[in-house]
Image (cartoon, rainbow, N blue to C red; front, side, top):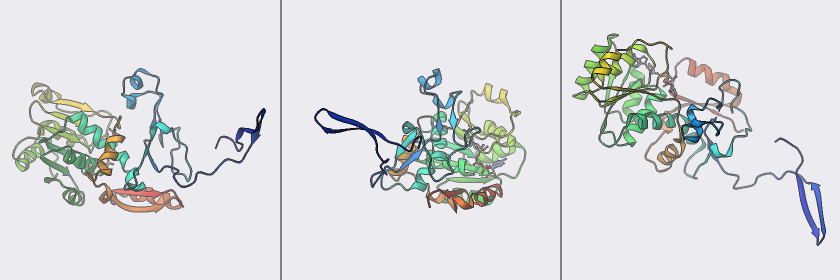
Length: 294
Ligand code: NAD
């Protein structure tokens, strides 16, 4: 609260209106449950005005310095970046709209649609939300890669058509293995590991005329076979977070089209936040949730 007073004009009788400070009312039942989209842009620049607010240079994003974010009991957020949750969507599902929106944006940028044949590189949380979104968008086949078998097991449970454990560091060998597993090259590859060899694989593996979406963020400078992409007209597209994706992600969850609950593997209280981050740091599980309410 900015103030502990509540200046109010009160009409006592005709011709008798007084300004008084009255107590701030507590929201009762029907105070809305919402999911928050954590980045609030300036709303004034050319990117905001053209609907690409994720590219705004004046973004206030939770937990991106200097903004502390919202691991707190009470938090104030811009109303137009709050999304009301229907009764059948839990707070945990609401929180998972954030990574799911990354999947929505990546699949949009890659053009994933009915019948698409998709390769997802990396089966971490972000690879998995891309798998879920690609399936929800109607992709007929999704192959997902990882170097860790445990992550591929989860991907299988979440509906991956094919999984491939990456063991070779030669990107062309891995691309060939993808082609064998899928029975042809995928039209769209969504790279979600950020690992340089995987980015290289993404290009070699993609069908001519297809699209590689770079989601994973690893090293700043990456060597990739750009001429191979150029002469085969493989488009390379980046993504930055998401834009106008929360309504879609919420609709996917609320309608039951996508079940994000299996992504949750650990739960901690706000008091145990440090343990939660240590769990993630050790690479355990998939999504580690921190419950901020008492
Ligand atoms: P994560 O580290 O949990 O998952 C990455 C996965 O890639 C791991 O399971 C790892 O085993 C796997 N991997 C590593 N090397 C590989 C290889 N050579 N081939 C195949 N798989 C390999 O991370 P995450 O939370 O899933 O995020 C993935 C990436 O997406 C990160 O780089 C993150 O920074 C990035 N990201 C980008 C955006 C964006 O807006 N562009 C948004 C969110 C996250």
